[in-house]
Image (tube, rainbow, N blue to C red; front, side, top):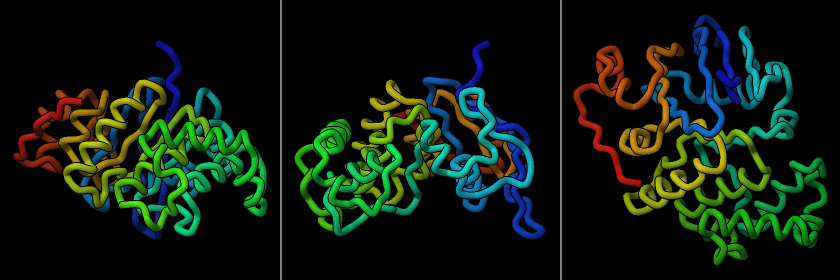
Length: 255
């Protein structure tokens, strides 16, 4: 069996006496969309923060493409091809969509954020920014200030920012949070296209979207993975139903 792109072994994170990440182990195969679901407070964002290097684990290990990245800082992990979108929008509201993407590309290439002007003028950065914006359907909104974009457009822009860093693994923390029905449908369509190009770990509460998109799903409850498998296995798992899904009937969208 080929080595997984991401391997997490017995990851532990404590906050005082609370075990927020309880010996979590999971593999993400190159080319798949792996969803992580669970109730509020399950530790999903804490897990993602450890994967990206924004939060240090107290035990266990994280390997990316066979390399131990457990103690690497976030910027080193980014340089190795790991990108993240946040649960709460983290864009620069007084800059244009293209500026935000160009700055991300500039930072990824090792330049300082002090050189805002360079990102705005450097042709290679501008081309990369435009290409990423076109990829997420925002080509026509490149010169619009972020503060004037809709919430759905800002979520799409976050994906463009992540794609500009040329990731091999994309970690998405609730990309559909706060979206309306139409915007959610657009995001599901976009993710269904992006999954053909980049490996994705998706944290999401929208179960309809999760079951439409995921190749595999891991269920996190109180910091512990209680089940991991293909959507049909998760849907039929009694422990998952009791802990999270309940008796709701999940209808898969067509994407």
